[in-house]
Length: 379
Image (cartoon, rainbow, N blue to C red; front, side, top):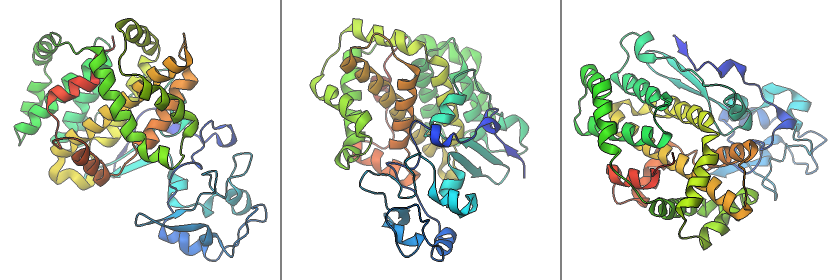
């Protein structure tokens, strides 16, 4: 089976104790059945302060899955003060669960080929995207008999890599085309080529450029979305260091001036390449999921909506961070931190994404105008 992956994939390595936001803290760490059976026979390392009868005793059932029970500081009990794993030190890498072994890798197995990528929940992955634009394999060109869905994805990635468009313009043009394809199913390769042709994209760009959304409207709606995303994390005391300052600022801010938004957009422009890499990676890894091929176009639209939410939540967080810190500059470390945190907060399973969209919006599939409202402009 052919396996394809972006050009940065093989450059990744875990930076362990040098990691600024460890994956062993403040989120769910799953333990698969095979690992759990193994853990029932293993004693905890002597270096762990709270000794239990075996490694399984440090896990419990939550939301239908077995996970590691975090301590009062929301840290994995196997995480040392030096941010190293007691289990690996004692037993070696083979003792780790599938989740810990694979993270931040993501693997999708299709009938025609396999795809692998890295998730942006890890600071070391973001670091790989800092230096240059990343390249993705064009599945529709190199895999025989691949679904037309991959042609749609390849063209969307190309759209976001086009630096003549702002990220916001790429979102709105790409989402418009996706909605049109969704409404006119079934789609053929010739239809897809027509929608993404140079002439069609030029006409679409000209039409959409006449639409202007007040920055204050975009800010207010994104404020609401960010606070809604953060409700449960705030309640459980997770990511407090990152969320508390910006949510406090969000609660007291209802309007913004054009000058403050323009100033922020100037700061964001310094990280245009990182965000393009981030978003094209999300498109590559999330738009097409093997289990959803039967209802794939609906899934693609939902995932695009989720990526829009993810991006606008990061952008909103960074704006609020600048506001509450009176910051004249936006550092790379701050951008990376909020990319990682929001990516973890939005790392829902497909079913959970559908449930969230159904419960939070009037319709599962947005109309284009709502996407335009929360994407706004930043160029």
